[in-house]
Amino acid sequence: MSDDEVFNTFQRFPRDSVPRTGVEPFIGATEIVGGQLRRDLEPANPTRATPDSIARGRFIYDTYCAVCHGMDGMAGTPVTQRGMPAPPIRMMIPVFSEAHLYNKARYGGPLMPGYAIATTRQERWDLVNYMKSPQFGRSAVQR
Image (cartoon, rainbow, N blue to C red; front, side):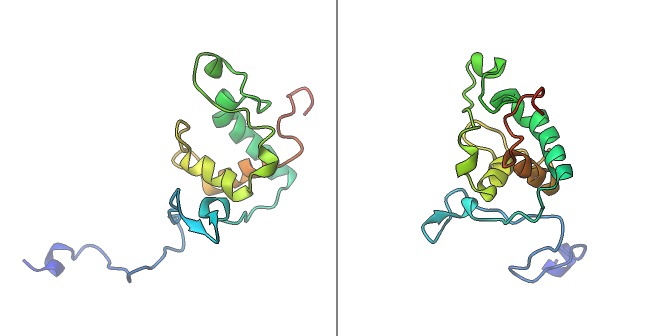
């Protein structure tokens, strides 16, 4: 049996081709570009930080992130009080690039799960817009 007979139900794409929709390219955790981690540089945020985007991002943060990092970003949650290390992130957000935050939500970290399977690209960019906004870390009463 030839290769064509075995694989005749699959379309063969050109080597190094990139899909136009669906799959994001993988960015390795240790890839360096110009002396910086590629995950701190790419991808660029395609979503404007509108009030709607920030509100959607706050919902994503409250759903996936606040359980460990806290609604205020200070990590004083029952999860961390019972031993799961999650850093307080509110003071670190200004120094992180948008790409870094996006990739952290996508891939996770040593103990943090990645949320690419649970969120869309758009939701992750909305999350970044919320975390970079002045509303991030403010209590529900202040919002």
